[in-house]
Length: 513
Image (cartoon, rainbow, N blue to C red; front, side, top):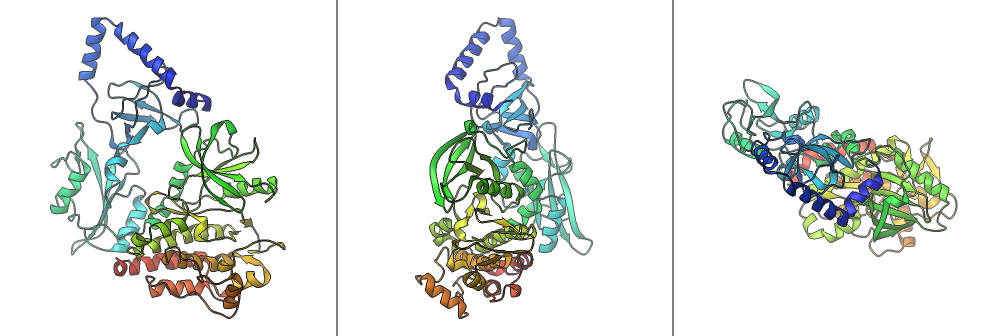
């Protein structure tokens, strides 16, 4: 299905109204026999759909092409048959409760299970069998459990840690669905909803090896990392993997901010998807450099890096199109929510972990960011943090890049070798990461306060470092200080920091809670 057809269907309200009216006339012309048949058909509607393939219509939809498309009624449930039509995920093939099938715009529906289960801490759809076992074994408590998606069927699975005198290990129980839509593990107990099944087994062991007692104190970043490949596949909007986006498919909306290389505006892609559009500022860099920046970003795919969707080069200024992050820059988010975040040190540490995870990926691919700071990270839903602004990123083979004369760099995030010799490496990124951690645990305070750049340079060269934030655990501050070692080779790598912080999170989380 072409993009133009997508736009036409979603934006032509007048045409939709005419189509709806025409359909009404056709229906009105049916004789009594056909109406009786329709009534009988409705009375014999299908059994409830499999929960993982059921969607709920968010809006009414009146198709222009009644031969291929299916109408939607807001609030009604539909069965998803295919989430990719002619190479595009913009349209899904679904079936209604009367057995009729057709195509619908995918943004007009929402998965039913997301609407009902996402509020529960025990529901973790990102986990697979292996990662759930790792998580529960790390917690090592009898009755600790999560509910996840089953890997082989359109069903759910309870992963449960059992630790008693008879057995120790993780058990997996498939939650089945009866023909009348009831949920069960064994056919002696049926429940109208998964929530009811979980509530019952919190108080009664039933067919389980032990009662459901608690939920693991998990690190959300760790869970996202487990399923990075799946998340990236779901997050990709360009089905044909093309890096170029047509100008006709892009609508520019309000300005979100500006940076060294241009203005960032919110946009709509194909009249459906919210995106961020970065417009190149004239004279800051060559168009070829700008395109090369985009090519770098297409190679960087990680849950904690902002995803590139494509580049528009048809008009000037040329622009990069990336995913839209709802809450904007991490710096603004920290300052805006300071009172709340100061009460949640575990969340602050998780933010540090997420950034570290993204930077470890860059490090493994021999990329240098050169401008890592809270202002260049973005926050999405569910406290997801991603590293952004790769305008200064360069791929190097020897893990070192010496900038050309006149290049600007942020003094308060720069290590001695950058201040003295303008020499960047992944270890200069590590120094900046330590400052970013300090920003997070101070909820967005300016490093070194009101000190001038010249004063900061003098302080750093003399060996002075930022003090420990009040709400920062000493163990975490020790990590920061290790990032601020004078010699680059004495600083830890991001891969080491990633492992160290994950272990630290699990150890000190109960203390911070």
